[in-house]
Image (tube, rainbow, N blue to C red; front, side, top):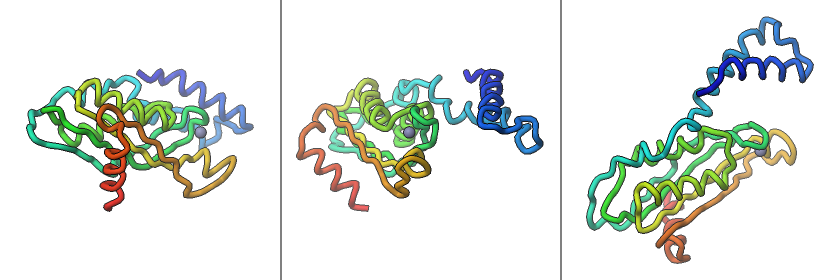
Length: 185
Ligand code: ZN
């Protein structure tokens, strides 16, 4: 649970710290707005991927499931600035599949918290392995980081790509197959 009072006090202090007047009309409602926003953008902290991944369906003979272009928004834990982009999830079912919308929900569980992209990628892959027990899983994330594009090195449009593979996806042949399927458009 977000402690709204603490967040509001912190935002007021931050505004004072940067030389603003937290009481001026334009900012008066800001601490409350940010506290309510935190419940959404950090809501993944009180969620568990076991929930979206617990309801599985038997499916024999399916060789590969790839869910492409899952849009996500997260917050970089080093700067508390957004990073956002697309996640692609592939897995080789082991007799069971999960509803496609549940893959997007799993991404949200880990994206809606202070995060780094490398860890986000690995956590989704590990959650799939733990709860769905597929023969293998691969997660690829491409994202733009506001802490790269609006400050510091300022490289607008630059993308960071990470991937994590587990089980039977750990071979170069499988990884190349997934990369090819993702770039098919
Ligand atoms: Zn950052």
